[in-house]
Amino acid sequence: CYYSFGSLLNNLKGAAFDTAWADIVAVAREVKAEETMLLADPGPVVTDVPKGLVVRTWAEGKVCHVIVVNSTVNPVKATFRLPCAGELIDVDLAPLAHQIHHLIR
Image (cartoon, rainbow, N blue to C red; front, side, top):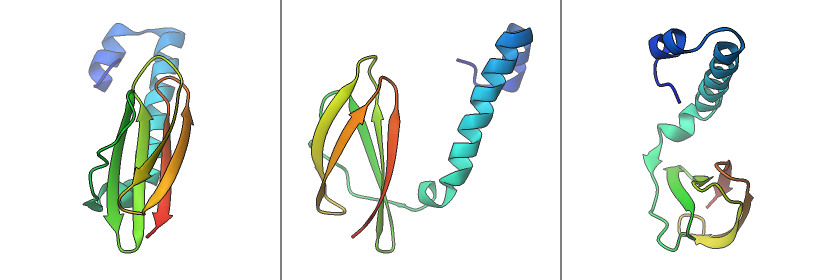
């Protein structure tokens, strides 16, 4: 994984560079699309997170934004309650995948 354009450019050539650059561009687009959410006030901490998942919440008016990430190399299926929305979330995530939810409180 490369964290700067310089190290990417110096260490990868040809198709490997093109693939890695496309991955970085895709991440940048996704971050830009969720900019408002990421800049919102932090929401409540989810305490009963199933093993292998990382959950973060943000509160923006009446909306509870949630990112759920499978931080493992195995698929994860789980159900847990979000304190900011008071509802259950079901996730079925591939390895290293994520889901974003925007819930009305």
